[in-house]
Length: 134
Ligand code: ZN
Image 1 (cartoon, rainbow, N blue to C red):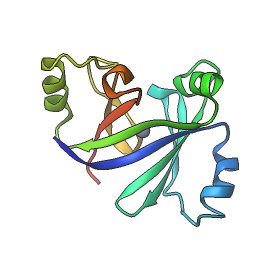
Image 2: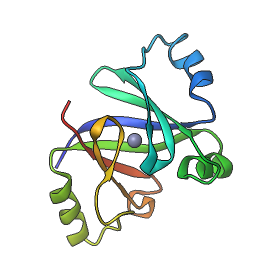
Image 3: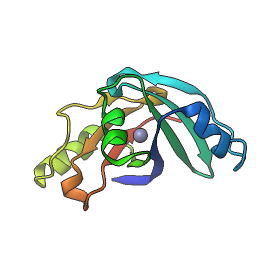
Image 4: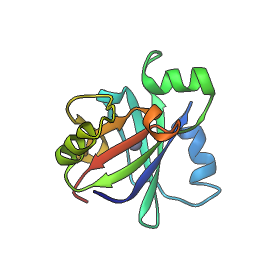
C-alpha cells in the first residue's frame, strides 16, 4: 500500500524566513511555492533525495497549521506516505477501523490527492496519505 515517505510537513510561521535555513544554509532548492486552499496553507517543497521537506505556512488565523503553531509552536506537523491508489488505501483503512479526517480525498499540492489519518491511530503522529503522478 505505501510506496515511500513522500514528505515531512513542517509548520512554519513564514516560508521566507524558514528558507533562510533550509535553502540558504542547507542548500535545498525549493521546487516552487503554491497555495493549497483545502488546507489553508502556502507550501514550499524542498526535495531531498527521493523525498521532500514540505514547509507549511498558514494563510489564515484559524487553519490547521495556524492552530498547530498556536498549540505546539513551529515544527513537524505531519508525515506523508505516497500511495498508488488513495481510494483503495482509504477503503482498506476504514475496513480496519482506522479513523480518517475526511471521507473523500482532498486536493493537495502538486495536483495530489490527500487524506489524513487521525493521530490517535498512529501514536500521536498525524499521517497523510498522498497520491500523485510525478
Ligand atoms: Zn503534506
